[in-house]
Amino acid sequence: MKICPQTSEDGRRLAETLEGQRFAMLTLAEGGELKSRPLTPLEFDEHGRFWFFTSRHTMQPLLGTGASEANLAFVDTARSTYVSITGQADLVDSAERKAALWSAAARPWFPDGEHDPDLTLLRFAPRSAETWDGPHSQVVRLAAMAASVAAARPIGMGEHEHLKVGDGA
Image (cartoon, rainbow, N blue to C red; front, side, top):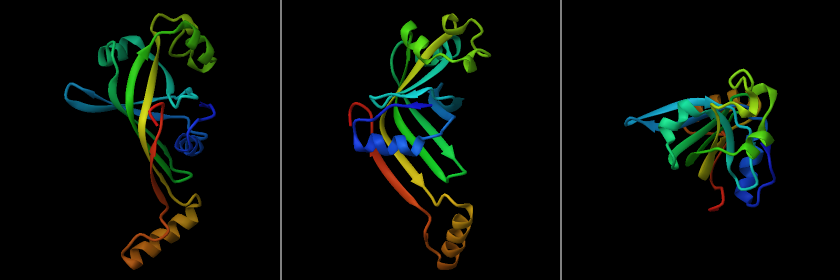
């Protein structure tokens, strides 16, 4: 994912936490139920928005023409980093933006390239984020877990942070 420079301190902290992330889970309300699907983030832009390629025939019935409440989650078990972002998702059909974000890695899903009629963009505009950042070393995590069990309280398990992100920050 391309990460652009962020304008707010919280946006910068979120960008640092997400460095190297390759997959996210997007959760939307569908027929009264919450359902999640994996997506590959293409960009975290300078306005704090995330951009994804998606299938028009799959997502248009869910998002229609307006923005919908959504959650975006990232997990990096190797670094013990977890992120949950609340915001709004909508579809954007911009030939210019598609061309700027296009890569050959998307071709298996969109064989006609950036001009594929099923290709559209999903824009996720965050409002707030929560991050959990534990010790990056597995040995340290195991030691912290053992100490926490022995003491019957969390010891050295990492940091939990609330962030305000996006244009509204």
